[in-house]
Image 1 (cartoon, rainbow, N blue to C red):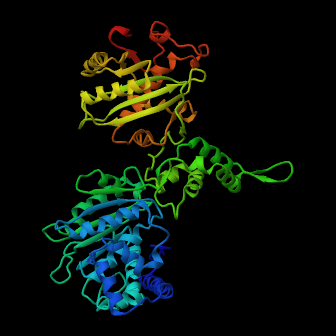
Image 2 (image 1 turned 45 degrees about the horizontal axis):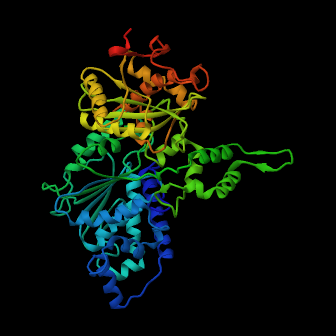
Image 3 (image 1 turned 45 degrees about the vertical axis):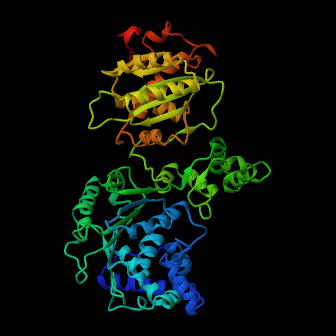
Amino acid sequence: MAARPTSRPKTSQKEFLAGIQKKGEELARWVELSVDAFPTDAGARRARLARVANADGVHNDGFRFFLETYLPHYVKGEPSLFHEAVFRLTPEILSRDKGARELLIAPRGSSKSTHLSLGFALYCIVRGVKRYILEVCDVYAQAALLIEAIKAELTTNIRLQNDFPDACGAGRVWREGEIVTRNNIRVEGLGALQKLRGRRHGPFRPDLMFFDDLENDEQVRSIDQRQKLENWVYRAALQVGPPDGSMDVIWVGTVLHFDAVLVRAAKKPMWSVTEFQAIVRWPDRMDLWEQFEEIYLNPGIDEDGNEFGGEAGARAFYAAHKTEMDAGAIVNWPSIQPLVELMLKRAESHDAFQTEYQNKPMSDGNPFGDITWWAQVRSDLVFFGAVDPSLGKKSKGRDPSAILIGGMDRLTGKMDVVEASIRRRLPDIIISDTIALQRKYGCMLWFIESVQFQEFLRTTLMTDAARQGVGISAVPITPVADKNLRIERLQPPIKGGLIRLHQSQTTLIDQLQQWPNADHDDGPDCLDMLWQNALPYVGGGGGRAGQILTAGSDITSGRLGGYRLGGGYGSH
């Protein structure tokens, strides 16, 4: 909700109730002052009600119309991409016989509660399409405030009173945390982990439940608390509805931890997941944004006493390069959170921005927080490829295969990762994808992990490529060092800017920043194989500028840290 108030239990129940009452009164005054009357003639009212119910034969935007017409004081700017998804989703939820399991992940400040826990709840109340609604937050105090916001609308919103008189006004139960509306709909606020079993409203069990930010910054840090909450969700909360499974559940939140219960739920097939980040697609020219950040973080005063840098300097730089800096970017809510404002927040703390706005928190103590980005693929790079097929490995399920291509700068020894394809695929698809990338980049060498059945894939790859007129030199590589040590040693070259990534390589970035707790680490493992084996082939590592080493030189004499060449390339 806009300007969502906060309240916590005080030293006594009496003081807590007084605080909730005060917040409720403030909300009611705000609604009364914010909402103007509108045309009240019978024809205008009929048209509005028909559109709200998606029954006017013209529109199918009933919920959006409801928000913009009856709750204009909560609506800010043009709808975001997240809001548009919510508008499409809500009529589908109400049209299903089977209960919905909707999981919506969005950044901080994206009006999740306004649109769903408040707005959609009111929409269902005034239309009478639900009988018993539960609002569940991380703590009871927050849920009680949601109930106060609903009460304020039903008692003081003149537009709702005009068009939905049967639902408006104080109902027969009208207290802190719980109401029964005048049209006999019960709405109750609860905190996570509260007892839920046996709840009824006459013959009705709960038929709509909102999970609204079930986790908080403190609770989510404890693995025991995360497990306790997850158990409560599946063993108690989801069992409270009718036995036919018709209760709709809408779970909205922001990811606060890489192993949050929200993250765990998103991996379960029972949930339909909708996820948005503040920056949906990063700008093409991240190099300019790096300069922008450097200016912002380094304010000062020159010899003449003039200020430079800081926020004013960064904004001036953006204004001078706006077209280039905006190119390629897609943001979730441009009317309220434009790109430049988001990038200022990002400059303050990359870690916090990844968590609060991108739903990508890093593992505790993760070493890959500082990543240098490349903006454009250069034509003077020498390309190498690496493939981790992930075949025949011991794991609970088939791991993703990783195909990476790095462009090496022969003068500096820096490597730009230009392709990072990490996904589950069958061996035939691994081969066809690798051949397609070879056609595009013409890699000098490919490094293929050759463990167990993977050696057969390497030889098949070269044979199939040759049949298609594509030359692929695939070197068999056998890792001998511990995997975690191999991944950990990527930190210095990544932090130092010797390995540069692209913002679009989200799977690789996630696996790096959630290591060692990520579900999979095939991307980082493949990246280490690519870096360690490609670097000796170029002159940046101590050779002459522009020198390209061949397979007959030092490459086979112990310079492959943590790896050995297999097959006919020697073993030691």
